[in-house]
Image (tube, rainbow over all chains, first blue to last red; front, side, top):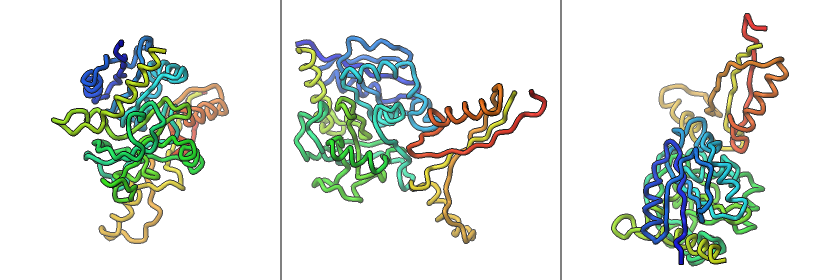
Length: 236
Length: 87
């Protein structure tokens, strides 16, 4: 079986790309960097927009990166059904690029939060969570100042109706309480999925939770799910 | 013609503004009482060239909608003046 090919987009100011590449390689995939001025994404099975501070978060987080040359290719890849994951700043970029609805606003409390949090898997009917259990609680670190997810009421009801909320912040026993919400995100939302189901945006960093030596292994299930999904596609 | 444009970007009214709320809570501690509805936005100042004022307004509004603001969370207003000495 050929290994899934993962492309990790690097913008000026990205800073989690090495962790993402390491995570995928560690779990058995091939991964390489794609500079944001490149436009060729052929041969990749999965694309990842990693965390960081693309363009220094100038104007709004993700606003300038959303217009980088690579983004037309990311958009075309997504339209063809290719799986795309945006983590933290990558999630912000996907929202600004219109690949996901809503926006990430400044955390309530105005605190930069860098802590492990618990998130509950809200759906397993996605290429990113198929190997997880419904309602499974994962411990994954967050590291952001602007992770306060917002969308209008209509969008929220569509996300809920169509099972497109991937993860919600929760207590260790899986309750989505206000205390468990680290940033004020609407409805405790930590991650959402696109209408077609193949684009995931999430604030927590699963690439920092793949090794028992550092940070646990709860992030693994997301990468393993998408690797399994892309292998199925590759094998036709 | 050259225009001087000042674009004010504010968080939408129906959305909470944690920065404004924090400042509102801090004001009385410094003895500044009576403030309410404190909100924080930003101003983008540009000089631009266009054939007419109508064209300038059209371009500014498109730039605000597509790039300078995120209409999901922000709204904008702007003032535009013809720069002296330009035609």
